[in-house]
Length: 113
Length: 115
Image (tube, rainbow over all chains, first blue to last red; front, side, top):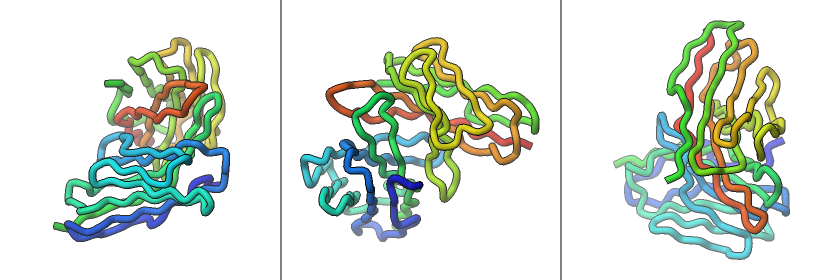
């Protein structure tokens, strides 16, 4: 079954607006939660990541909010730009042999000029 | 920069052919992975390896096998290609650390079409 659930499947935002993508997980052993950004024809690239000992991490216009008790985390893109148009994947993993990641199903973000 | 290189960007193969997808990483990573990406289904793990000659099944291993004879190279093999294996295939690698978890580095992908 899907270990990480992601929503929405697609998102359209005006330039300058805030894009919000949500993810939820079940396994409390997960200890690392990255977000990946993928442009058409490219492989996903690590955008930002958080560990469960903090509730928020910010890098430029990108912020992860993490709610450990609710087992949810979200990506906020402030002042969204057309260049942010991409597919975004959340993921989760735990410290173990192999370091297998569990990915959400992805969100296609379109930022309209 | 860590590089994960997939040998082909685009491949077209016939049904029943044996297909090899190659992946090479240059940063001495222990872990390597093969995913397939399909619209609406996200990234699904086919196989992974955490050491030379070691392999573990992922969520959808049927119809695939892998080979890891050297640390830097991880090959995905489609034993007898079928049209439902038409997909984008992504290779990734990561460091194995007992102290903390690290992110993946992905290759650019191979878009395989089976006709």
